[in-house]
Image 1 (cartoon, rainbow, N blue to C red):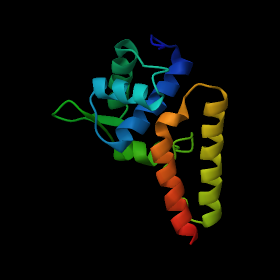
Image 2: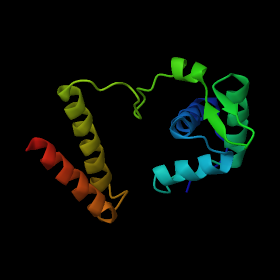
Image 3: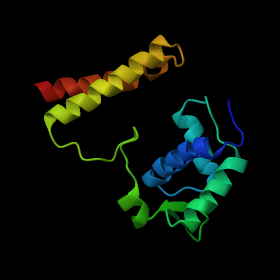
Length: 140
């Protein structure tokens, strides 16, 4: 697991992770770190020394707001400003061609993960089979 403080260039990547995580649902700093670690299957966990200063900067800039319960949430300003095309999209996919391109990209990603032996995909077999079954049902 990689952790630690990062320079300004690398911290931009952490900012995107935080936006993606908090954009799904409000979270506190520890929950953000846990979620990022889960999402990349334990390969990287940002440190508190990186996350909390970034959260403070994002609150000061108006990208996030801190709720009374200590959780952070994305602001309308962030929704209007953020380019979600950095891989974790929120853009509209409106045509079958766009959906298929997105599927193709995601399958390529899984193939790369498997071939690089970074992740043993067998643990996700049931989920993958369920998705395949759903796709088959759409094709009928």
